[in-house]
Image (tube, rainbow, N blue to C red; front, top):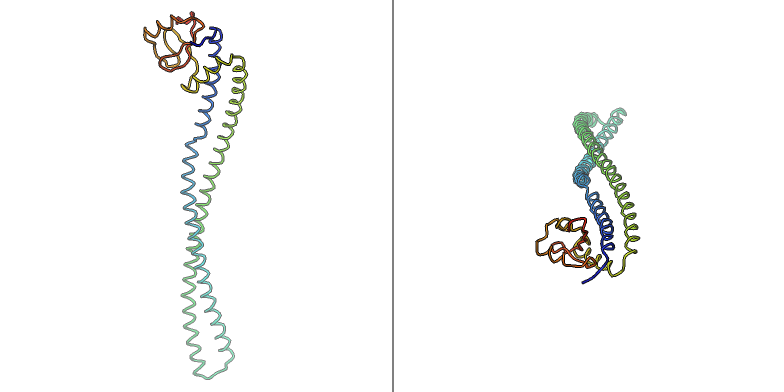
Amino acid sequence: MAKASSAEQLRLLDLQALDSNVRKLRNRARSVSDNSAIAELGLQRAAAQSKLVAASTEAADVTRELTRAEADVASVVARIERNRKHLDSGMGTSKELTALQSEMESLQRRRSDLEDVELEVMERLEAAKAAEEQFRQAAQAIDAEVSELEQARDAELAEIEAERLTVVAEREELAATFEPALLAIYEKTLAKNGIGAARLFNGTSEGSGMQLSPGDLADIRKAAEDDIVFCPDSGCILVRSAEWGS
């Protein structure tokens, strides 16, 4: 059976306290990293970006439609201007001028129809751009909120890491004061069971939180003070003291 003085075994609790603190800090960092609010905003941002892309595509399509409508109006206007100049010149036969005048009336009606189409497209484009801007602002608002939460998260993670490094340094300093054999047993137990050492207090293992059976307690009482004994449930080193009623 491995041995270590009761005083050395007692000091293992200080080492365990530091290791427990390191574990708590790691768990806290993991919890802070897994920020549900940021994750939820990420889903909202994806939805907002999808709506923005759809609105931008719609605005681009209507813009091209307006360009075609404007070109159609411009073409008719140009034709009307050419015909007007021809009519003003008075050149041509009476039949030709009459036909040209009739064409002018047809072109004016065509122009009116095309301008109505152009106006309708302009109204749709205005609505499409308004929707695009609305979705852009919504996406930007989500981005700003995400950025704020991420900055707060990163700041908290930095604080946790700074504290963890301090505790790790303290832990390394304390660990260096133990006999290598005892430290090896403790660290092997810690790695295997998640806890290296705990008190045996009034017959209860603080490693498992369970009351030991009468038989287990009898075996532990038979062990010498410098014997290293282990919790039958958690597997950790049980640190005994007469003051704790163990």
